[in-house]
Image (cartoon, rainbow, N blue to C red; front, side):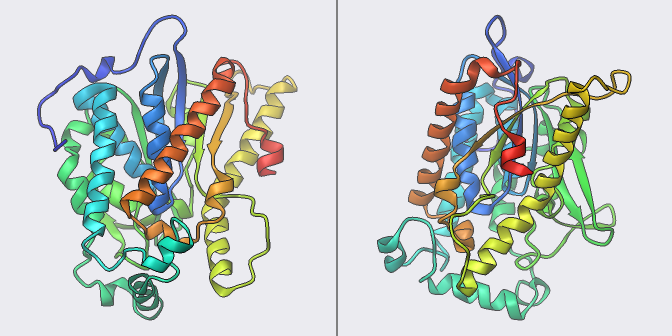
Length: 355
């Protein structure tokens, strides 16, 4: 599916309506190629005739998935969004296949995902530790930017009525989070949210420099609290919080530090949500100004904890499809177990998972 200029569907009527329809907000984590798991989650939700989404907040790959889904909804409804997500991930894989960043035969033999024996990955990794992107990537080549520009018409996206979209980025000089709302959505905003500072130059927007949104909020949940009516938030968590063994090799330590860093903002927000929930349950609601959330989580920690940082740069089609299938199946399982809980109660144990 190429970029569409004319409407193929009424985007204000993209979601199912009527009795039995469950309403959700989505919070989409970032994690490079691991965002293919989120693609699978979205594909399952979009295929469901009893699920409607009001708002989406995302960082990095979560921002990309959110923007692509929102634009797909605006031009082709739910089926259009599914096709758009597939087309974008396919193009990302096709471009990656033309680069040295392909898993080696040994990597494929030892497991699907990591590129620990891929010369192209180690070349990029070494360069990024010695030189900044202002040196080794002087022209700021970014195939992801070209892909999103090819598929998404941001002028059209800014007028989409099907979903409220929030994208987070990190203000480099001020050390604060920046939330781009739908009305100010742009290619630069999405690229700012996905800007890894050791691979790409900071993205300049209105005189401010931005890096990956995952540093400050992965994802930022508070825009859903203040910007939507829906009280149910489904978090798609792709960075594992828990792992089974202590890292001992240099690469394992770096991988674990990366996941801890990119989960830090989420952990803080979940603690705040838990605190507010306890206040409300205790009878204090600040004259109705506090909003009680029902939190839900779809994750695949058992799968993702075995994937190192190198796999986040692995856009091999078989690997992406594997993650997509995992995301689809985990969402299908979650819906089978908790559909009735949407709108009624939380299904995520915040104290156990995040405190």
